Length: 209
Ligand SMILES: [Zn+2]
Image 1: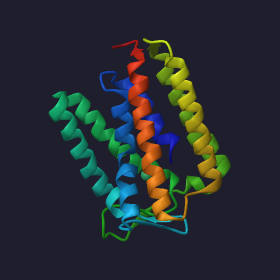
Image 2: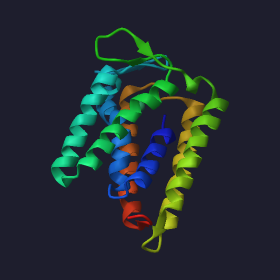
Image 3: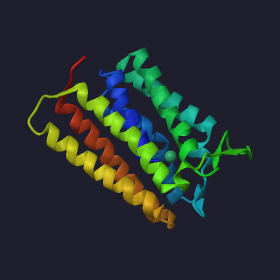
Image 4: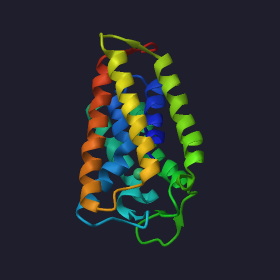
């Protein structure tokens, strides 16, 4: 899932404007940002479009990544509500991936039970459900946001358009079977998304902050 996670980040910014949109995006993408280096190192794998990704994507490990991320935020910002919300945002990655993945989502490393509702099996259902959620999240975000600097709308909508096109390409083509290419490409692309979100955040003002 791509824009589904990013939608959680956009709505998060509406829920708690004190947290930068970049930090929200970092939280919702954290499991994938952990996964890509592990793919490159061949510790985690994708085979026949089903993943073997216990360290980045199991429920237990996601909770641990969430706790570490929330603790780091708390150390820097001393804002408990923000830390708890970001804990939830990191954990939301697991819930959304259970909805979208074929059964490959584990509870904990070494536990055989796998979960996955397989939304991605159907391109039309993905377009309607994940795409619908994405549109809803964009509307929620933009209604609560006012430009602070020239260029906000330009930066925001170009980013949204490129993300939507990339997402559409991904659901049609699937993942790159080469783990190094997929991992390196994913790392670069996801860090660009995070940088774009921090930049966009500086160009805007939340109307309720
Ligand atoms: Zn994921």
